[in-house]
Image 1 (cartoon, rainbow, N blue to C red):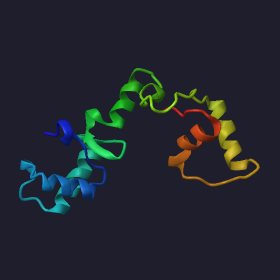
Image 2: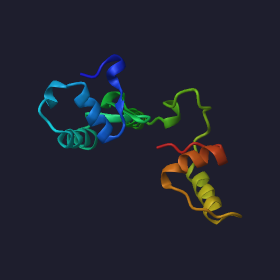
Image 3: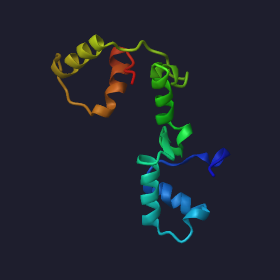
Length: 132
């Protein structure tokens, strides 16, 4: 079982599989690296045994995904979960989202960006938080 300081594993499947084999996890004894990589993939995507916490893999109940689900279930914005090191920003409305996207895509300097960076862009440029 993952406990204490050993709760965090490397975030990538390959690195996580290597670490699990290095720790000699009993249920993985006799498995090759490729099999353990597949087990890590299934544990994160289908079985929800592991989840991501920032860049690491942790037991699902300690993960970002679990926290998001709990907040969504309780109808709370993600800003109530984010560590307080980041300033709490107002949550964007659909109108804010529409205006911001229009500005980014069709403004004075139209640009392209990765969808995954949209939350960061909204925080930096519009001082708004996109809540899930």
